[in-house]
Length: 358
Image 1: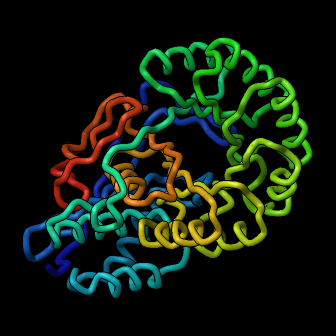
Image 2: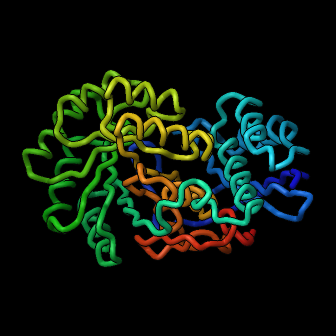
């Protein structure tokens, strides 16, 4: 099975409601789709969202990295030499993790097809069904309460609440949400780098004192401030999840060795795909630190890849893969089956993606 060509396409999918965080507001998923064609007729599918505010990758940079660097590096290679292909992918250009992730995902799709097995079984085969949380965007308190109640009615048992724009309002919002939904539902919060270290400690301690029973706080401080991240981790009882602070396995090793966070969030668009995500899983296992798997605003191709990784590895204990259920339509045929909070894999080879309606 030799790589014959790589084609780049685009999809545009409206969200059910605007997605609002401390960093941005988004109304549509505008993603790059990668199709890798082989001489056997097999097609591998990959996907990447341009998330400049987090990864630094734009639509133009993703396309440019694939067309000008990645494509010429791996076309003509045989899928049986998988490690060599992945190494070339990672060495042909620095950074550009979203472009690498799109191609990496398509390659792993073909890897599963080559051996006629669903990818999660090749990577570990721990389970085939997982349960995701759902994200509640930053809005006025009344709207966030309404959105939280609506999510629970749809069957969600875990909510991830976006905070980080105003710490005083964040406390008010969380109190109102917890009062409205009771204590049978888990609450997570994601500050998206929105607080200063001392501010984070203050507001998190106030949430502790208010008995809000927070599952964990995600990325309370700016990504590069590992000292600040450790300060928060050392000074609050609420577990701290490192997200934007960790892109590479080396980033993960630094955070793990310094005990700067209690948990690690793996996102394929940050790691450059499954290959490096697997290394982070191994590092986390060695250090006894559980992982969450998350996504950007992505459609079903790349999220399906994340589902396969989550189903393969027991170290991934927390799931934040709600991207496809936030979309108002699904142009992808095949892949993981999303039924609100329940996500199930089929036993079709690779990712199980059949086609895409462009």
